[in-house]
Image (cartoon, rainbow, N blue to C red; front, side, top):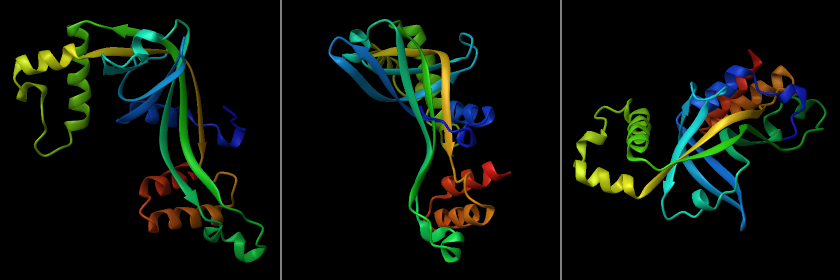
Length: 206
């Protein structure tokens, strides 16, 4: 990934991308070419040297069984949004402005490990569910469903774990603009309902 120095993500921003509940596109090499699947993941910081992304996919998905040994890639996407040049204070000064796109992303590389045992899968889906349900007023739990039903669901999936070897991360959030231009971007994004994008622009200015 092309990362100019002023768009390099700070370590805390990388940790936020890894730890925030979300999904990543898992891309692997197979004999049929590249395959990709969008998967919700859980970050396990204690696995390996750099942690691991743990997820699962349908057993019928050919990606897990067709993927060759070697490096796999997960792409995590943070807030992203169109940026209008009309939001820049410099538009009124000289007019030399054009549209662009703000975004945060991490390209996470590593070795793909397949988990096909019920114990690993049970722990994984419980952690994943608890992570997303925890803030709800009436959180759902795996224990709310019949055990036989859950056992059947677990047999229909396989675990995929990306043991991280390296991460390339970028935050293009108007760092190359003046403070006045960045403030205009944050205000424009917020007015359009893009609160996460606005907060990200403000965060990198601090």
